[in-house]
Length: 342
Image (cartoon, rainbow, N blue to C red; front, side):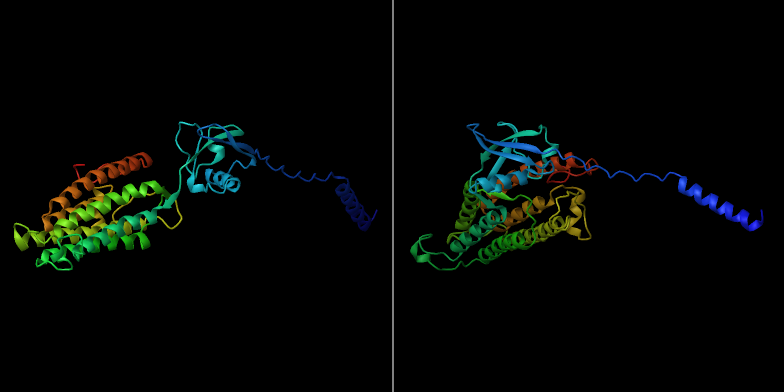
């Protein structure tokens, strides 16, 4: 056999082996994971009557999604007005909670409660701030039926009265502008009935202090201009500090983000108080009213400052406990509202 024939035989043999070799079977396509849908029934919190049955609810649905589905069947109960619970006496479920992470089976029962008409927190803050601003100016300009008729639309002869009006107005105008352009309010709404309580407190307090500061018989501070200047410097310093903290908190997380972070001092010196206090916005707010009290030497202002301090301490302690619970590495040196004290 010549060489050419031998090579042809080897090639033909190789081709035959290739043809006879078994081909690998193609992989079977992966089966899609079977989605286990939930069946959700919504019961009335008081009567236990079944209001709605939702079939084939996706396991990744949030409480807010369920509220939206409920709203389609009952338009008058928009999501912000709804309260859903797993137990009639339990806590309200948060909107961001996911159905499949809740301690329920594939058939879940929720108890619905009506929170009543709601207002956005932005609206509430604006109402709280606009009222004191307008009321104080009514007393400052001495509108009729406030003081005896002979004092209608008259002005005080004391410079401190005009300074107090400017400071008070500045404070509430600042709060209004912050509500509109600075604050990112995490809470969505508040029951309409609560606005009367909130506004009543701020409005009545503003009217009470304005009545005495702008009264024709108002007496100036005992230590004169030195006392006024000291109170003014404290007030202005704390107003700038309060604004700085609000900006720092706003920049802590981007718009729409719900990720919570520990606030730390920035390059702004007014934020360095974060090293010692969890809620320096309340610390500066308290300092502003202390300065206003010193500047005006007015008992109603001092009383308002005391009540505000008690309330802000409650809020600050709650926020401080929340920080300690959420962050294991939260700075232990920080106090709630007053460094090393409270």
